[in-house]
Length: 264
Image (cartoon, rainbow, N blue to C red; front, side):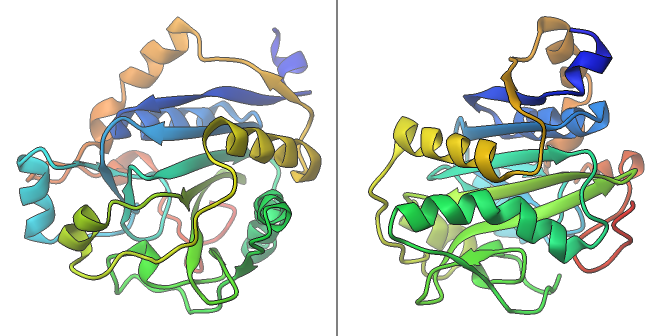
């Protein structure tokens, strides 16, 4: 497919379960291509992803990683730490989003709200102020997040803007590992009602809603090619966090919700 033809479609990548660093590298690479894209994915093992600007890394997180309890990675998007493993993650690439960041969040989350409305568990946006002070993404609910009527947070989202293009990450909590959550965040895991749809059924509902409500060109299924995977693998190490942090800041513009210009 030539570049002109590709721009007429939104690239829909197949669902996958991969390591955390590779998942983050794929999303950042997709953003650099400048083409609309969407993918849903899960995590090969428990993973703690830190937001781009999150600098406070407690020692016990490194200890858990060293013990093989989880993988520790850096996201290209902002926000605070998210524990993955019992969740479904989405990555949305939007080449021409609205310039207003809050408006972009609302338009980019409508498809999620529609699905949960169909499932009988409607979601509204949170209203807590954005802050870099905490460490746990699910400890508060900002205008980037979706919560149930009782205030429990189901979906946390974060953005990264580059050259006017948007990468929006989000995690849909499904089945939290309550023991590991307690070890990581030293507090109780969120209490969320089970969903009436899980697995492939939930993914199909989400994709159908995305096709109907996201302001993007029609979807076209298109897996990553071998040459693309090779290009992605070349930047893999920048997303892994060990005892000595390796930050992607040197190669990514510094932007986060409520802080930098949305035009990146």
